[in-house]
Length: 219
Image (tube, rainbow, N blue to C red; front, side):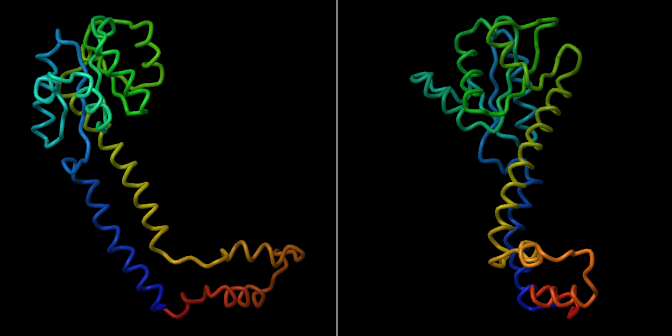
């Protein structure tokens, strides 16, 4: 194998290992899952929070994390640092000023939102219906708390994989050396006047050597 290529691959793998390990470590999250709800459903949300924390997932829950001296600052921090905002919605949620602020701010920041319908048969209108148009929602009345928790975990894992995939892509791009001109760009620019379909085996071999792509034959 070409020695320079081997070193590049080995270096790339070394750089990527820490990033790959993040995918399987759900508790290695920089953010948290924010739980947004109206207080009538507090016992339910506490149960969800406890199950998530039992699985090592960071949560933001008002009774534990809210700074009573600065409610708006606390709410802003909760949304800004959330990896996922979970909205337990109902008619009272829709009519709550603070709940509206939380959900609307999350949408403005383009934070991932997962909606859990906690009021049986409730069909939102107004601002809440607008936010729900293209969002995922789970009906708690047609499922269980276990299913709700599993949906939250699956959504969080999906978001984490997307984030790590982007990081991996950038790392690969930065780690593997590139030619000034891509071989295919050179191929089509230098042979625009020649019909490539008529190339002979010798033509192909010459082009491979010119582009230094013949390292595979030395492996």
